[in-house]
Amino acid sequence: MTLYVDADAFPNLLKPILFKAIKRLNLKTVVISNKKVTIGNSSLINYIIVELGADEADNKIVELIKENDLAITADIPLANRIIEKKAHAIDHRGELFTEDNIKEYLAMRNLMQELRDSGEITKGPKPFSKNDVQKFANQLNMFLQKYCKVQ
Image (cartoon, rainbow, N blue to C red):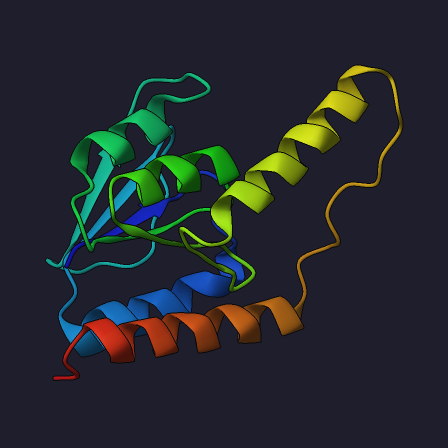
C-alpha cells in the first residue's frame, strides 16, 4: 500500500502524527502539492510539486493511486474519485470515506456549493481543533492496523 497526501491544505498539527506512522510502518508515501510542503525527511517520502491550478494535485493523485492505496484529503470530489478507483480516503478530521458514505458527502457538498453560488451566506467549516487531531490520529491508526503489518 502507498499513502498519498493531498498536501496543499494539510494541517500542520497532523504532520508529526503522519510522520510517526510512516516511519513506524515503513509506509511508502507520496506528498503532492502546488507548493513546497514538508511532512518530514525520510527516504520513504516522495514529494511531488505540480503546476499551479485548481485540480492539478487532485489529478496527479488520481493518476498515481492504485486499488487499496490510501489518500489523505479534505477534498470530497477527490475522495469520490479515489473511492471509484477502489482505494481509500481519510479526511483531516478523521472521517473515513467509503463507497457507502461518499455519495452522501458529495451531495451535501454540492448542495452547499449551490447555496453559496446563489448568494446564500453559509457558515464555513468549524475551526480545526485538538479534537479533530485526535479523531484523525485514531482513524489513521485503526486503518493502518487493519491494512498494514506493524513492523
